[in-house]
Image 1 (cartoon, rainbow, N blue to C red):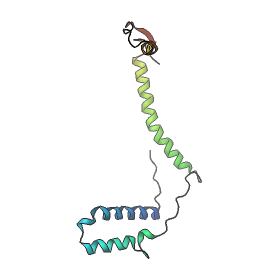
Image 2 (image 1 turned 90 degrees about the horizontal axis):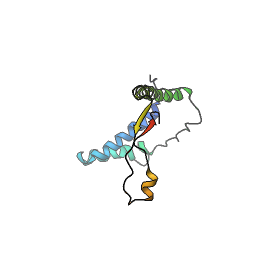
Image 3 (image 1 turned 60 degrees about the horizontal axis):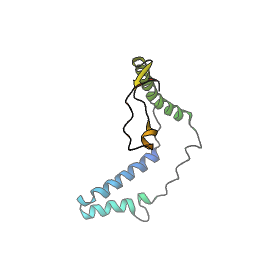
Image 4 (image 1 turned 90 degrees about the vertical axis):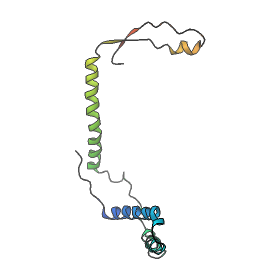
Length: 129
């Protein structure tokens, strides 16, 4: 049910560059010092380092509402709504009518905390509640 999303080449290149620099930061201790400094200069050289390049600001996602993106979100929601509706129908089928449950008397318990618990009689309660 998912549609193919277009991949922006510049954004993909920037994300891969960030992941490569993070990998260098994590694993730099395992490299020889000369190799580490060479790679560090590639990423962070003051004049021509890859991470020193100007990155354009992210566009406002609400500025150009893409109907296909909204449709993808609805498809994702529907995949969860349909199983929930089926589960509710099954529960409704097995628990039709009334169910006997003990009454909830929270107010009396909080008002008189030292009193013994109220009787444990049961009350018919609709199954839909």
